[in-house]
Amino acid sequence: MKLIPAQILGCGSAAERRVFGYLAEVGFSAYDVALHSLNIAHHEYKRWGEADFFLIGRRGILLLEVKGGRVACRDGIWEFTNRKNETKRKKEGPAEQAKSAYFSLEKNYLNPKFYRELNGVPRGWAVVFTDIPRLANNGSTLLPEHPDEITAYEEDCKGHNSFKKFLVRAYDHWASKQRNPVELSPQVVKAISNSLRPNFERVPSLNTQLRDVEQKLYQFTGEQYEKLDAISENERILVAGGAGTGKTFVAAACARYEEAEGRSVLFLTRSSFLASFLGNQGLPDGVTVATIDDVPKFFEEGRTWDVLVVDEGQDLCSLECIDQIDGVLAGGWENGRWRWFGDPNYQVSPSFPVDHDCLDYLKSKGVATQLKNNIRNAGKIVEAIKVLAGADVGRPSSKPDSGIVDLQLVDAESEILPRAAAAVRKWLSDDDQLPRNSIAMLVPSSDEIDKAVEFLSAKHVRSEALSKRALGGKPRDCVLVATIEDFKGLERPLVCVAGLRQEHGLASSAYKAISRANHAVTLVATRDSVAELTGKVAPQDEVKWGN
Image (cartoon, rainbow, N blue to C red; front, side, top):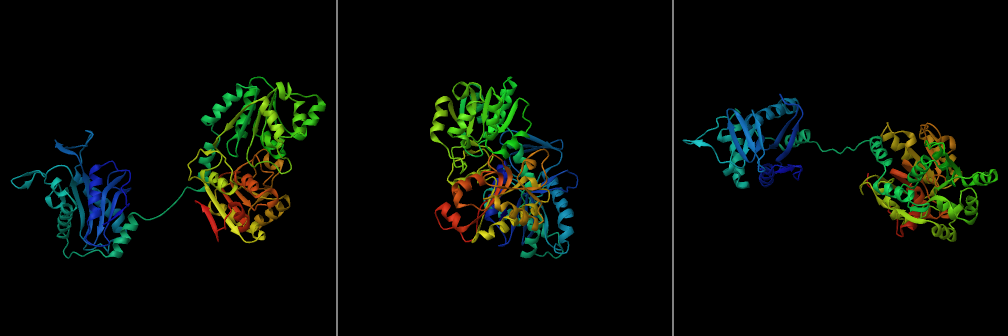
């Protein structure tokens, strides 16, 4: 007999597990089906009912109510005691439970769809007591509501052969109630089974998934609290971490804590877009967010700050930057209070390579620590970064199989933008509640931004290029289009990467782009570029790390 589900799931009843095993060994045709733990939403008098087993097969339909352990009935109250010596008391006996469950199924589910097909088919219910002997006096059962024809006891549950004999007895009993009993055909068995327990797969909408992601994204982890403690205890500290480890999140928290202690804070980065974004995150008035280009002006004005917080520090690791910043930090690099956050992987801007002498200098002046847990990227995105970019972005805090990664391969670069626009359109079509501003499309170079906007417009997708206005105030309901380089330090729940460029370094380009996504990323790239990244021949169509 085919069991649905094929494995017994989440069942604490040893009696049901035993019956499950017996049913797997018996059957009266090749198409018999047994549904285990069938929920009944529409019950005659219960808010919710359940059938332990519902058998549909050649011989007919049979609902089984299974009771294990010790059974007693005192003054009309039934008592069921399990092996943990836990006792449940019910006014309703097992036969009454089975009967009411069966008629609820028949009335609400079987007759409305299969009334004609069930005419003459034996159908009814039975009770199985797996652990107690038959109660009898002078050969007759002491339980009138439990006639032997439809009741199994310990002796009927010794193995699948004895259990099959009981089923034969029960089917014969219900067949005797029909004037002209008929068998069920394979087609009707399948139709009833599919109706009561259909095969389907539904997942939460993208918008629902993103709400769950967002709730987790802005909660401090234990590791981040530890780093904040370490940072507060040191005057000068370097915090290294791959993309997604929460450097900007921790950096912003540091700025808030320092300001709360009465210190003035300069929060410094290279990207004007990241600075604009941070400036709109509600940092206190005592925190000044600026870019490295603002520093010469600050020096001329004679402005200094008590604390320096540097984000994306790998882009400011040059002698020129070090000298400029030294003049606006009280005490300078030598004696001042600073927190430097940087990425040891590939997120270095092509135009601003790391000067390792400068990095060694900073390390000599401060304590070094590292963020090792990835809080931003779903598990599959972390794995994709490792495979395509060869970069370690920490241990994912989410499940390894969480998130969506879709690698779409094309033969020519001219196919990339149309395919990418179609991927964005599909996201929005699959979930009409999905905010457009939860999506970013990243392109390799600035001359492709306008083209990307045009392709999206052709797909009826509202979009806009990355700008300070786009990052400020209330989020606009538009897909954000930016270059991979300009989007460093920023993120979106869903990111579509429209191509990689050799001149930027394929691994670096892939790393910076893919790591911007929280929950889902689609990478559209040529077969040749992916083959070069992975060092093997690219597949013929698409590669997916889950759905």
